[in-house]
Length: 221
Image (spheres, rainbow, N blue to C red):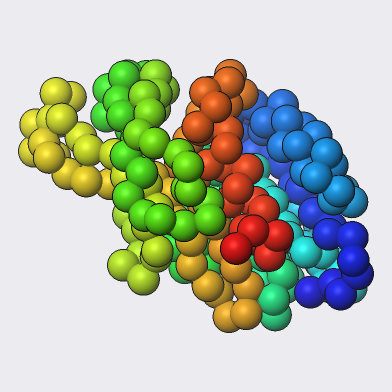
């Protein structure tokens, strides 16, 4: 990880366009620049082949839904995070990337599998006292309610409860929405919110995601 006094964020977007990866990435690029970050934005996964560039970053922020990644690209990414560069992302851009690459899923700590009912009303519950959640309270969303397969070693910060209205067998299931974890020496933060850019008009959704980026960059404790 870089030792410069200026935090650096490499933001990588792409994959399925329905998640508005460029728009959401640009939203958070602006917010990071306002907080003093030197931000680089790219839509080319070959950036993960540049070990020297990755090592100079404070955090890698990814918004690439589905798509595919080569063995060399994912090795570059995982080596950088294991070595101490932070990693963060949201929704399918980090939690549904590279479905055929379990090594990547192991790093993130989860993988999307369903959103019963598609766009619905649901509530996010804040469940941990953490720098990312401090001062936030439970809030409502009208969007996809993500059902994920998650790593039990995650530090869960927020959850949502499925009612069973759309799939009766999952009634009462409490599902992580936001978490942190370590991958080697790298901090990893994930938030399941943000299906489209306008979802981040919900203040709590935007703040929960932004704080995850800052925490992964070591700028929030």
